[in-house]
Image (cartoon, rainbow, N blue to C red; front, side, top):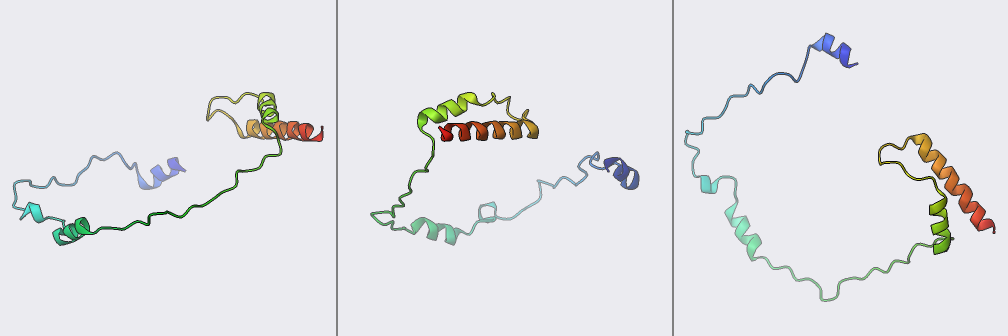
Length: 110
């Protein structure tokens, strides 16, 4: 697709930046007022937000796992080692998943 795009539209992305350089000597007005709403900035600085003394607490139950800590360690030890990140193919991931599932079912059946 890239090849045909080059044939149809020509090479792109190889041109240098051709936008004119702005004249830095020209008068741009009062720089200290440029782009800043001073009244809004002062209002924001003077605004105080009161936070409640006691923030809301959200209690979350820990996740449940059908395996004990020892069984999880056994499962991790039984899985094939993971290659360097990015080098694991989809087939490798699938085989690792299948091996882990089989080992987990084997642990839970005892």
